[in-house]
Image (cartoon, rainbow, N blue to C red; front, side, top):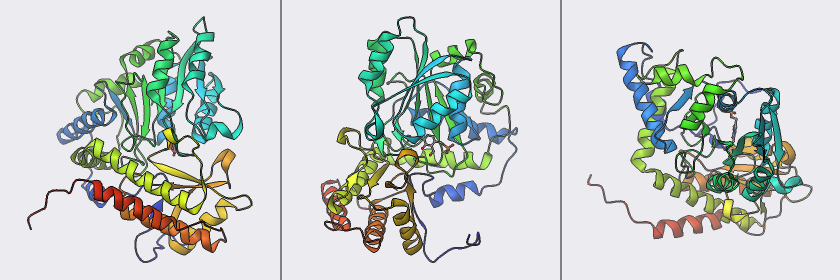
Length: 408
Ligand code: PLP
């Protein structure tokens, strides 16, 4: 293991799909002095981030903010709304959906894990018709919640959450809708209220551009009502005390003050750029990345173009090529980290992240690093992906309205 102060020249290229690069503006905000979390200034910071996160989730209802990783917020969503032995319907889209399912089992729930057979399910998003069919068959309404992942970070596949909501409504089923958008929020369009989501789970280290350490539950009035009836044990995760104290901008325990400074700054950055612009930038980078993979003649893990992820692209290796060996070579030669294939696709693919504080030239650096590494690893490429990505970004830049010229 290299010493922890090991820094090669230049910036490290953090091409994993989260944690994503932290912009200097957030690093500076984090270095403000830590203040008294019960003092008068803190309440203003608390209210600012709580209100700001409502804008990011597109909700008018409370958002709980935890000093925890996304896994904690998964647990919070389940333990606040459900009771021991409750049936929940979960959809297998990839590794993270599988981990959430495992957590539900450990918590004493009865999760039913449905999906397309084999690896096919890891190449397509949630099939809303399968959800509807299963809910229609549940005439006694034993299923208490439907849990889906909006952006599967393990594969680069998104899911149509509005379609899942329509499926639940079409089946006239009262199940709650719990959605993980840990890697989708602030990168891909997301609408908590409009899509009728009851609990949205998210984290700080992806589209929000913060380091790991904060996670979220956006709530609905039905979720808050369910929390009044549910019986799974909870203390740290319990929404009631948090929501009550949040009214004045405070928490029942010590929140991570310096990360909240960064969160306030991140919200400003996202709203200054405009959420629609942020989403369009992610779509542009994703399209350029896919153009590169197509030019190489390699396959994209997501097999349904309608649900390509704007956050990351999964690149499948030709038969016989170990994706992890390629990844390691790229890391050691070009100081570029890429995401590994996880679970069922370990060694079969790697993941290129294009989320958060990324722009056209960041994407080009990632693609060029991959191209050189693939060639050094002996993978035969059909054509230059870097040139294809440049052509894609150049066309998009030509079509974009020029920003107003700044006077110097
Ligand atoms: N869900 C998704 C979609 C994720 O991408 C991740 C982490 O990458 C998690 C859940 C788990 O979050 P954490 O690692 O922050 O606990």
